[in-house]
Image 1 (spheres, rainbow, N blue to C red):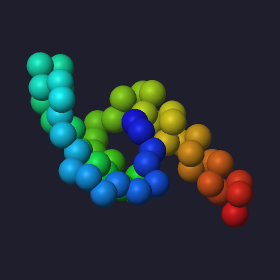
Image 2: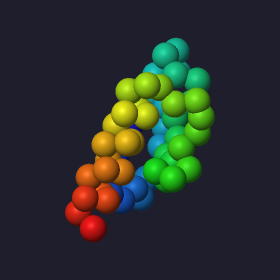
Image 3: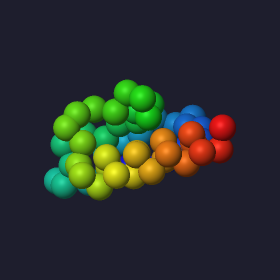
Length: 53
């Protein structure tokens, strides 16, 4: 998972032999199932965002 502030370009898959697809998703609209690592990262991001507010 990569966090980007702004994306103006079209995402493209430069390693099609390794990945079937690459796409941008809003953090509240991530596809499922997510990996354990992605779930943990997203949970930490949510906790830090909540703590700042």
